[in-house]
Structure formats: C-alpha cells, structure tokens
Image 1 (cartoon, rainbow, N blue to C red):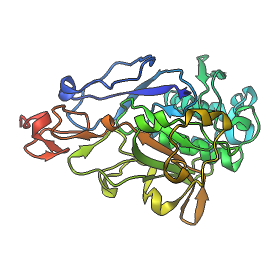
Image 2: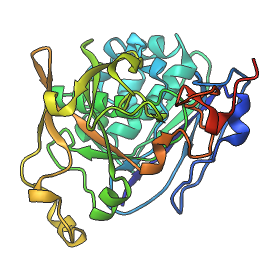
Image 3: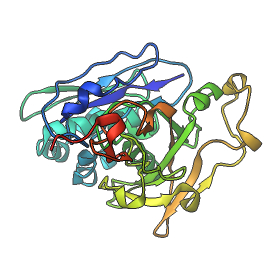
Length: 343
C-alpha cells in the first residue's frame, strides 16, 4: 500500500491530556511531533506542524492535520501556481514570492500539502525564499495532478482534485489520524485500494470537493449518518455531530454525499490490483463518488474513510480532546470519561 506522509499539527492542549490515549499508529509509521502550548479543556486551535511517514503497498491511506486556517488564505487564486505550475519556474515567480512572504509559516504548511497531493512519491520541490534565504523542501505523495506537478498550467480537473485533497486533510483539532483516501486522480485513474484497507478503515466518513484556485471554495458532506450526541471525532470537518456544528470554515458543510454526489460505477480498477481483491465491494460498487454537485456546479471529489477507534464515545473511559467535563453522558458533558468540572 502507498501511504502519503501524514501531517501532525501542534495544538493548545488542556489538562485532560494526561487522560488522552495516544493514537495507535500502524506498524512502520515514524512519528515526529512539535511541542504543545497551554490552553483550556476542550476543542483546541492549531498552532504548529510536522510530518509522520509510512511506506506501504498500493493504497491511498493518508494522515491529516492541515490547519483549516491555512485553507482560508486567498493565495491559491493569486500566487500564480495554477498558471505557472509546480516546477522550479513556477515557484520562482514574483507573485509566488509575494504570496509566500505574507505568512511564510502558513504558506509552508499549505505548500507541503499541495506538493503531497499533486506530486507522486519520491519527488521533491525545493524553494529558497528570496527575501529571507530560508530553504524549504516539500515531498510528493499521492500524485493526483502529475501534469501540473511537472510545470504545466493546472487544468480544471487538477485544481478540483487538489482542492478536494487539501480539504480532506484539513483537521479541525490537529490530531494525527490515519484516513483512507479514495477516488480518481486528475487523469481519471482510480487510486488503488485493497479489501484489507476497506476492512481496516471500515467507517465511512465524508466526501470533499470544490475549487480553491478560482475562488469557488471547498465543500464537505457526510458519507454516513451524523454522529450521536455521545460520539465525537477530531475529524469534525467531514463528520460533525449535526450540520449546525460543522464549523470548519472555509470548508462549507453541504449535507450528505448521497444527496450531493454520484457514486462511481462498477469497478474500473487497475488490473494489477485484481489479485489483491478477494472480496470486492457489494454489487461491484467502488467505495467512492465520481462527481458531486453543489450550487449547480459539478466537481470531482475525494472520499474518505476512518478506523472505528477514531470515533470517540462518551463512556469508554478515556477523556478525549473532543470531550469535556460535566455531569452528562454526551461528548460536551461527559462525566464518565472526563469527570465533573472543577468550577
């Protein structure tokens, strides 16, 4: 399976962290973390970032943690990348330098994800900031927009699939969570997956679509029912407890994938994958969506899945970052896991 290097964001943490279970990472995953700051008990803001990496065979599993604030920068429509491509020439334009130096830390974070989404494994993009002299290296990963990654202007399909990829990796709470990413690249090729991946990532999560490059924005819809009141997850942008709690701007929640999207037709998967598929999905239906439509416009989406352990439940004995103290049995007031509040 092929794993895109995961991105782990730092966060303001609360006194409940000592009760927080460390995420279990699959074998071979090398974890790196930044320091943490102080803060109040409950949902936290993102403050920093680093990568975790795993090499695996023929999959589209991925980690996540891109700041949603990073998506709100208006630079993707003005930094010149869609016109000049992700080559050395594209990164050396005055427009890109101007955009990058408005907020280098956030631009670096966003560029890490753009390159991870667009370029393939074993590819790098290097950039030396002409203003500060700081050198950056960004690694390829999923290979969703290979033409754009080689320096040609981005097509509409490439803009859409990279936008969907960025949205799918935005993590409201900044905890590193492995996800399964499914769909097609900009050329129409299906991202390979195996039955083992579908079994491990057995919880449907969401579909993501839109276009950040032309100012349209990005959107998400849930691929399952909304979470119950006693459930919560750090993946709240794609899987909120209800539409009113989907506060992950600039990602706009649009309801359910079923109401917005068209499922992919009977499996059109790479021949080399057939040997890995002992138990195809029911009725031969691929586990992802082909198109999603919102406000009269149709986009190419990506579909995500989670492991069951990443949906937290009040009463499991662990005070998660997504839970709060209180005297109730819901995530926002979970006495069983987080105790009563000291005030």
